[in-house]
Length: 247
Ligand code: BTN
Image 1 (cartoon, rainbow, N blue to C red):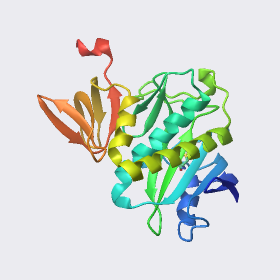
Image 2: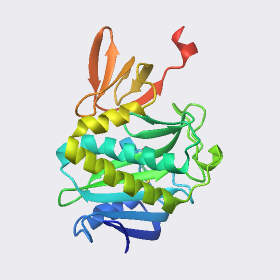
Image 3: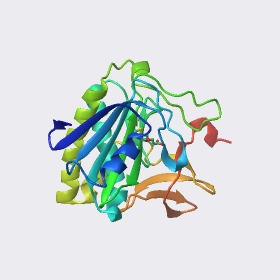
Image 4: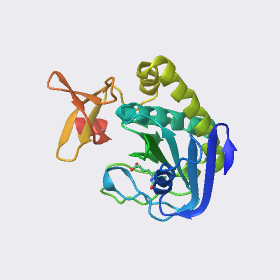
């Protein structure tokens, strides 16, 4: 184990999933705050039961920390905001935005993913994948495009991103503890893509179209449709292109 500030860092050559390893560690946490990385990941998992295609050379990391599960909705924002500022440090030149609930868009393309899972002993595991050297081919019918930092002209190193992330995570976890979700939410809203824009939310069962009005005190998406604002619990956002609006 190496140390990065208060974090114990466990780096593996190859793992199925860094989240699985971090969940296993939570049975007997080796140190209260830890991070697991792997140079190669063979069974990466994504949100909503999807696979996370893990190309060699990308960053795969999972942080484990004691955190009350009732606040997990807030943690999503703390993690994504921290990753946003970490990537800004290595790539200040690219247009970078957050996308609800926990994606990062660089030049309108997804460059990272975050998967929160429950561990043992009141631990939460936050798994993060960042496309550094390559991004998966998603096919023409995909609802979004993905990219990697290299293809956007950014030469980044996985350890550098890891260190910046942990630093920012300490900052925003502290902010949340001291000032509550409001301050984190405000920072997140300052950097989110498409506030006030027309979106489609692809949920488990239905697609809902409306105007993106922000998030509530629990991080649920606020969507305005037919003069009322509804709360959306989960789903994938698609931004409606301007020329599609005329149809
Ligand atoms: C998403 O679907 O957008 C979330 C993807 C999360 C992928 C990361 S890679 C490191 C960690 N280990 C996993 O198996 N998944 C997460």
